[in-house]
Image (cartoon, rainbow, N blue to C red; front, side, top):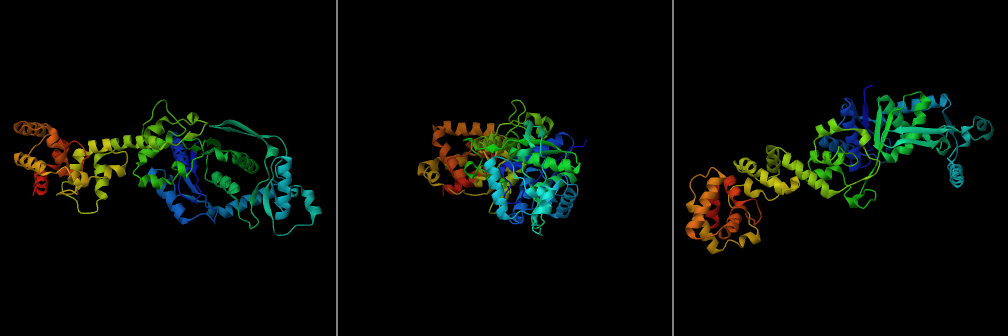
Length: 461
């Protein structure tokens, strides 16, 4: 059997962490089985669905590399098909027209709550139709739930879960205006799309029992279910904005790499031994849905930053240099790429995110005297400038290696009876405009002798 999974978000807001992880698990499971991963936009809630949200979902999935293997299905465009199935369920007796008024429904719902039973409309009894005298055009279509017995699901994550059929209310399939509800639409779409495995949050577990009744009533194969635990904050509470539960696009803007987000999200609820850091390809190769835990996982932004730091160091230096230069707000030096590539191992060692990597690199991407911080400028005393001027004069036309530079610098200091503290910080200030930067010798090699002399001479005028 060919495996087919799907991610089916509702476009009522941004793509959040939980949704992204659900998409990821569906994608990785399908790919690990040589199957297909599809996307469906569940936009039947016309009042809340927005084009901006749909765009944000596609953008977020595209950034993570989780767009479907075929064009996305828009659920609202399948409405005629949903109505058709509702009509079939009416014809075969698995659904019925319910004419309860709002007031009657409220009374019935309150009584059911008091009695601790599921809501069952009197209109489910065919005999009631002949005696009520209340039929009109204002009705909903309800699914007729079983009158007795149990319903069981062998969930791939939760194990076998059973409910008593009488605990389930006769849910609405079509509203009084004829529009299908989510509970009907999702089943019809999953069947028509050939979905074999439904991987989603465990907040949908109760829905699965109701939805399987529709499958049975239509004589359709029931997909395998896998209900994964939700993501909580560090305090154990349901993830919210105060825990960092913002849209995926916010993490992109904050400088996280998609590879890091994939790595981190995979570890929220799934593990492969003690492996903490891995690629998408490795996740696909290792994935076993049986290893998805039943307990909620906890989101930890510090752990995410650590994972991102790893992937930043593993990223292509050329790619990172291009990203830094892309954020420049003025024409850059012809030597900027070379300088960045020379120092990239040191830059990525210090940065946790792309935003941090891009900060403070002006001295590498622009020629000439760098913008000076106040504390750096304070280091450039007349005495310090004198030493810097002598150092600039002493430099040969070229120093090709770090060892050559260190040898020259040591000879310069020894000849004048100086120590590194007499030149280190002022030299860093003159070349970078700050007190904080990678090793000053590495900076000199990256900038080149000509640029180093030019900056010192400008400072010492």
